[in-house]
Structures are given as structure tokens and as C-alpha cells.
Image 1 (cartoon, one colour):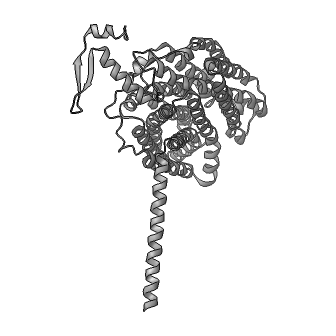
Image 2 (cartoon, one colour):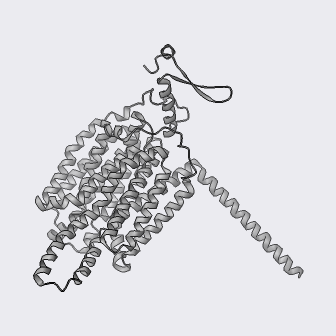
Image 3 (cartoon, one colour):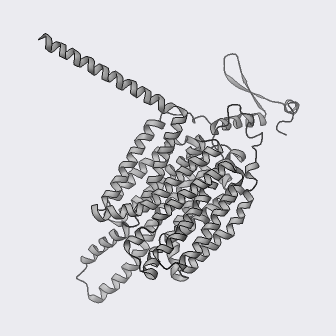
Length: 514
């Protein structure tokens, strides 16, 4: 009896000790997460996984949906087998024409809805912060992925694709903006955004073989369910680390510059134009190159499926080189972007001259290498332009960047096929290449951006603790009050009051706002 009681006491003590150790480890983990430097890295991981998922879901349907829709159509045709042979022939031709259009619209629907929602999501992000929109976007993407897995008709697939565009408008924009807000130094901002771009590239290029293999051997739901599980994990990590619904620091803070004002900023407009033009070759080749490869080089299905995968490596190399060059020569970001556009233009023009799969890899790698240069150089430039010319809140400006991508990818599936049909594949590539080469000199307008300094009336230039986005925004609000003639004072009870400031006082203070 005594032995039993002693064993029970030892077990209780052992359990209490383990619980205590577990509690201590949980506390240490919580403290580690709250450490600013570690939190920045965790946030970068969360954002990169979200971008990876979005781009994998965007491209994973490429080898799956056409074959799956064709199977659905064949099943529908079998139910109409009682009609006459002539009627069947006519119906099949009509259906074949509609089939290509349906695929094009389905592919483009994500980018079209994302394009429409981005102006609203950018403003929403500026008002509520970055964490809540990121969490909302991940939830919508999770739902769309699950719907993709179990969809059995065109209407449900279209709904899932459109929902993905809605989720992307929140997750992508808030994620990139959060990186720009957390990484305030230009060198580390370029590096962090470069890492994010590498994940975007990896997601886009690895998704078609990933989806094709799993679809072939495990069925349609499996690739989507795997992506849904990763999305759910990322959402849980976002909820645990960012605590989006308990962190209300932005509640009483001023909002950023309205998106329409950012759109008419000439420097931001030049960057947005470059992002559109440089992504057009990729967006227009993705829906057209498979048919061209079958017609001209009789490519096999595995070659078509692996068309873009080798281009991942030069894209990562381009990101790495641009980050290193930007750290060493930060004044030449515009030049790196221009070099990238020339690379894209030259590579695009040489695509039609390729006679086999090996030759085709060279210009496709050149296109992705050039896109890496343009994106890695110009995305940090957008953040810098907002810092020096507007308010350091980044939701709207990166919504503009997302709009630029969406313009290219919304037009691609709908317009590219028609251009190839009317003018030819050679003319399409020559036109895209020429557009990139001709636009490259426009980046000369960004030559003096690195020398820009924030005006004293907009930001405090003497921040001893180093500038951060939100801190600068608060400083701007205080200076705006002063410029309007309001002087802030703190009374003996600690209550902030405002008093009208005379113009003579303002003038006697040294003409600070003259």
C-alpha cells in the first residue's frame, strides 16, 4: 500500500515537473517570437509561404483543368448520343470553340477579380494594418483550394478560381507591404523582397509538374488538398505570431496616401508601367507556347510540362545578383531594371527561332532572368518613393504593383491566343520584345530617385532612433497640425489640447514650413 502511494506521488511529481518544463519552454518560445529581429524573420517566412501557395495554386491547374474539363465534356457528350450524326458533328464543333474560350476565361478570372479588388484592398490595408488582411487572404485561399479539390463542374471551378483572386488581392498585397514596413533599411528591404520574389518564382515554375504528376497518379483532389493543408498551417502560424485581432496599434493612426494620388505620381507610374511590360512575355507565352511546341517541334507532354521549370534557376540568380548589386551600388536601381527589360526583349525575340526543346530553354531562362532584375530592383523602389514623397504606409502602393501584374496576367489567357491566331506566334514575340526594349529608356526618369530626400514638412529628418513607417506617419500628422495652425500642448492632467497658432509665431520659428 505504501509502495503504491509512493509510486503515485513520484508520478505526480514527474508530471508536475514535465508540465513546468513545458510551460517554461512555451514561455521561452513566446519571448523568442516577440523578439523584434526574430519576429521579422518569422513574418518573412509567413509571407513567403503565402506567396508560394498563391502562385502554386495559380499555376497548378495548367496541366489539370484542360484535361479534366475535356473528361467532363466527353461524359456530357455520351448522354447526348441519341442525336443524328450531322447534329453531333455540328455540336462538337461549337463545343470545341466554346471549350477553348472557357479555359481562357477560367485562367483569366483570378487575375481579373484580383485586378478589380486591389484598389479596395490597398485602401483597406492602409486603414487596418497588414496582419488582418493577410489572415483574411489566407482563409479565402484555403476555401478556394478546398473547393478546387472537390469541384465537379465548370461553374464551381470558376467560383474557386475567382475566390483565389479575392484572397490574393488581400494576402499578396498585405504580405509585400508588411515586408516593406518591417524592413526599413533599403539594403535589407531589397534582400527580403528578393527572397519573397524567389518564392513567387518557385511556386509558379514548380506547380505545373507538381500538379501534373499528382493528377496523373493520385487524382484531381490530391494536389489541391496538399496545398490546402499548407495554407491552413500558414494561417495558424499567422494567427499565433501576428495575433491579428488583438493587435490594434493602428486603430488611431493616420491612413496612407489615397491610391488614386499614388497612381498619378509620375515616378510610381513609370515603375507600374515597367512591371506590366516586363511580365507580358511570361503572361502571353504561358497559354500559347504549348500549342506552338506541339506544332513546330512535336514536343512530348513531359517536355511541355517541364517547359518553365529550368527557368527557376536563372530567376533566383537574377534576384541574388540584383540584391548584391543594390547593396553595393544603391543609386543604380533604375539601371538594373533597364538591363532586365533589355534581357527580356532580346530573349522574347529569339523564342520563335528555336527548333528544339534544348534551344527553347535559353530564351525562356533569359526572360525569367530579366524579370528577376526588374522586379527585385523596382519593388523596393516603390517603397522608397512612398517614404520620400508620400506617407510611409505601403498597402496602396503595393496594391498598384499587384494591379500591374494582374493587367498582364488578365490579358494573357484572353488576348494572346487571338493575337497568335490573327498575326502569328512570331509577330507576338517580336512585339513583346520590342515593347520591353523601347520601354527600358523610360526608367531613366528614376535616375535621381536615390538622391531624393523627404521634405521637412512631411517627415522628421532627424530621427535619432531611425525611421520606421508608422513612426514617420505619426510625425507627419503632428507637423500637419502645426502647419494648419494647431499647436499641441499637454496640460497638468496629462490631457492633450490644441490651440490656434499665430502666423507670427510660425514665422518667428525660422520659416520652418515656408
